[in-house]
Amino acid sequence: MSLPFSRLSTELVLEIIPFAASPEVDCLNSIYGRRGTYTSALALTKVSYDFRQAAMPHLLRTIILSTSLDVHLFIQTLLRQCWFRQHFPSLALEYKLHVRRLWCTESMNFLYDGHDFETMLGWDLFRDLLFNVQSLGLGIHSFHLLNDLTNLSSLSHPHTTSQSLVSESCSRITFCGPFFHWDLVTSTIQGIRFLAGITHLTLWITDCTIAIPSHPRIPSWVGAIPFHLLDRLEHLEVLLIPELNEEELDQVGYHGEYLSPHPLEVLVITLHSLRDSPGYERSKEVYHHIARGRATLSLGAYVIEERLRSSDPFAYGVVSPLCGISRTAAANAYIASSWESHFLEG
Image (cartoon, rainbow, N blue to C red; front, side, top):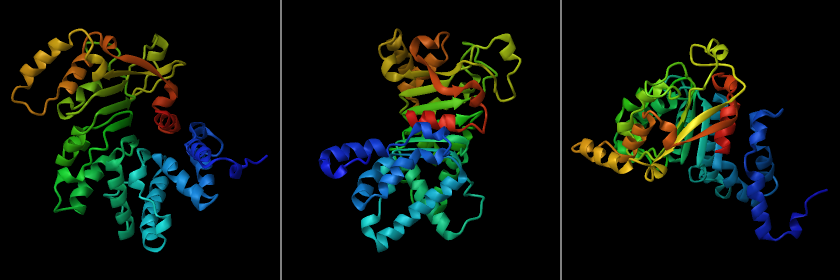
């Protein structure tokens, strides 16, 4: 039985299309593969010109790039929009205006992999899009994009200041993998400016081998977070060390992979919730004393770091399970769809 769209009001159709065009989380693990996530949305764009115009902004709102091939095809799509603007203006879309959230599991290294001029032009468009999304998620095999972005910005725009190249739109960042090297972004002025614009930082770092001295469930890698460069930080989410029994502890691998039937958990600390917590005013006084003459130290980053390193960080944040992500999948590089699903849902 077909749906008689022609009998529905325009207002109702415009309500149905966004719902139908939204990415389908369940399809990430379906028999159709990860690309099944956009099956319904793509079908809508082929109905008619009007349906395409209505569906495309919703299809583009959240982009999941699972492989290097996906990145290459997406870049080709960006180049096609340039061709459309010249020959079929009515079909052209400014992707940068519609893509609000983007996740990349893996990508080729554009600095070292040889490409023709057209692909490099497409990468220039891709880079500008990445800097303008509101939320950016990167898996371990795409971390190098941060380094590529800052270096290629200097190469592509040698007479442009670093400040003008970094958009303040990209303020929510997610890093996922067994580790993360902060010098990818702290080693350049462009990277430092990128960090300064982050308001929401999510770290799904699966290395759970060592804890900080003050609490057994806070991983030691939080000590490498450059809080002094996170000028606008308001929200921090970190993956917690699990409470493992002796049998599970014996199975912990080199990068913290482990087996357990329990879900992974994250600790979320927000500046908004800390403003009502005990000791906040005292922390403000200490901060103002420490920050005197140090313009780069922000109150939000200082208070969040202080609470994270306290003897009871759970008293200042919320512990939540990462539903759908088993501890086995957490450190398995081949089970990336679980992390993609969680990003898609968030």
